[in-house]
Each structure stands twice: as C-alpha cells, then as structure tokens.
Image 1: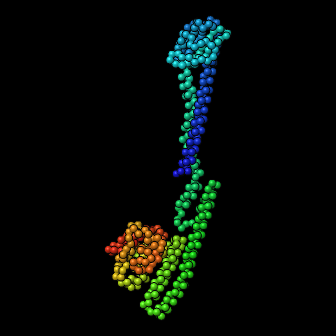
Image 2 (image 1 turned 180 degrees about the horizontal axis):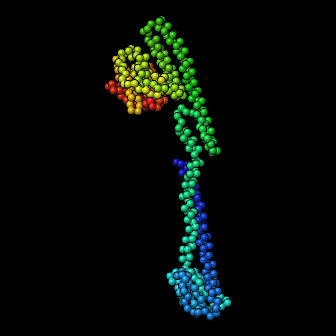
Length: 440
C-alpha cells in the first residue's frame, strides 16, 4: 500500500459505487414496473373515458381524428362483428380477442399493449392500445433522468472523500514531517497540537523510544568523556616512570622505545576520543561564530611547525582570507588532524600544501601531501572509526588509532560542508578537499 489516502478513497468509492449500483438496479426495476402500471392505468382510464364520451345509443360511424401515432382505439358492437368507430391509425379488424383485460398483440410491425373494456350500459366493446416500445422508452427516460443525479454525484463524492481523508490524515502528515525534519542529533519528543486517539500510541511510543535513545547517547558520551579523563592520569604516571626507566637503561634500549611508542599511541587515542566528544553537535553547534579559515590555518601550522621541521618537510599556505560560520575549536581540531596525518605519512623532505580559496558560494580548504596516498577504493572506508589502511601495522610505522579522519568527517557534517578525497597535485600523495558554506 503506497498511500493510505488513496487506499481509503478507492475503498470508499468502490463501496459507494457497489451500493449505488445495487440500489440503482433495484430502483430501475421497481420504477419500470411502476411506470408500466401507470401506463396501464392510463389505458384503462382512456377506455372508460371513451365509453363515457360516446354514451349515445346510436353513434356516428366513421373514423375519428388521430391523436397520436403511438396509440389507437376501436369501438365494436356487442358481437364484435361491426366496427362502430376507430381512430385513423387503428386497423379495421379485431386485434387479439375481445375479452376484458390487458393483452399484448402484434400489429403494423410493432408490439402493442391493449386494454379491452366491456361497456355493459351500451353493450359494446372498447379497445384502447399503445405501442410497447414507446411505453418503455418513455419509462426509461423518466427513470434514467431520476437516476442520473446519483451517477453524477459519485465524482463529487470522490472529491469530498479525498478532502475529508486529507483533513483526517493531517495529524499523521504533521507527525511524518516532524520525524523527517529531525536532525541526526535531535532526539527531542514529537510535539503535535491535537493528537487523535488512533495516533496516540504511535506518538507516545515514538517519544519513549527517542527518550531512551537520548539517554543512551548521553550515557555513552559521559562514559567516553569520563574514561578519557580518568585515563589521562595513569598515562602521565606511565610517562614519568618511562622517563625514569630511560635514565637507568639508556636511550637506545629497544624495550624502552617500544614502551614509549605504545604509551604515545595510547595517549593519542585518549586525546582523539576527547576531541570526538567535544565536537558532538549539541556541544559545538551552540558556539558557532565567524571564523577566518585562512587565519586559523596560519595559527595551526605555526603551532605544529616543529613537527614539520623535525622531518625537514616543506609546508606552504596559499589562498586568501575567507570567513565562514563555524565552531572555532572544532575547525582547529579538523585542521590539526589533517595536518597531523599529512606530517605522519609524508616522508622526510616531502612537501605539504595547504590552500584556502573563496569560491562563488563556498569556501574551499585543501590539504595535499607528497606521501604514499590512499587507494581510491578505500576513500570511503578511511572515515570509519578505528579503520587504518594496511591495519594497525601501517607501512609508515607511524602510530595511530584510526579516528583522525572520522573526527574530520564528523566536523564536516557538523558544519554542513562536503569533503572529497583524491590524488594530490604534488605528483603523488593524498589531496583532501573540503567545501564549507560561505558566510551570509
């Protein structure tokens, strides 16, 4: 069933049409029967009227003036041997038999209904006849004219039903519009002005489900935030003990180096989890402001410049000042993750290029590197949580947790922007292009 409204319309119309058809059929039959009885009564009245009009004992023989070609009359003597008078279109012989009552006869290529009346006072027979086809035509015309308004009323009823069902389904449409218009982070209850009885269960159960989801998401966020905060302390303690251990075993000890890499990776994971929590929609969207993306990129590059210098990488910033509406901390986190990935996977002596361009209706941020890049078939998978190309043991040997591009994608969605991965213009490597809506 594609549409409740269409289903109700067709069902009601089918029911109305069926009921009307049965009623019309019955009405047609009964109306035709009544019409025939009315015509018979008229024939009988006409015969009695002719008998009363010709009450003289001796009537003038001859042909009476014809009234209509569809009826005729005859007056016969008591024995039915002598035709006393007739209408112009009546035959000169006895049609049928001279017995009182109604009869059907054939004459002049037509079927006729006649009534034979015995005039006891003057002792004669009066025959009045009428064509049956004309009787039926007149009866059908009268009956059909009375039934035509019922047939015409069906399209009118369809329009009224369509409008009435539409009004009745208005709360359901409002409910569907509210559900359809909700953002992914909006778990507030559905609010309807007047909830019909049939929709109360659906609305209440939906609101209860939204409430449970909201509670579950808040519990998950609180758990992730609390766990990350609590893990910072033991990580700091481990770093202190590692420093003391390095003093005892020396800088070149392999076990110390592996332990350091593991602690650094754990610390990085905790910081990424905290960043993911801080950029949740309910936290970030409330603090949108005008942000100069070019100036913010300068600040982030300057703060992380020591990492690029350590690997002797050449980093450049091109473009122009461009202002967008966004959350400054979230945008800073986005740039830090993009530049951190470029720094990690670009080899020593490589090149990184950042550009900010003001387009017609959007602002484009582009980060390109000369590293190994990402295979095109994995462009979508790298946005999944904890996914890393080549798994945990990446070819570059750089530690990572697979959350960097997930956080980037999350911030892009938060700002209603569009991200696209592709080959770098530096000959090899990865190019990340993000288009933000321009400042109105």
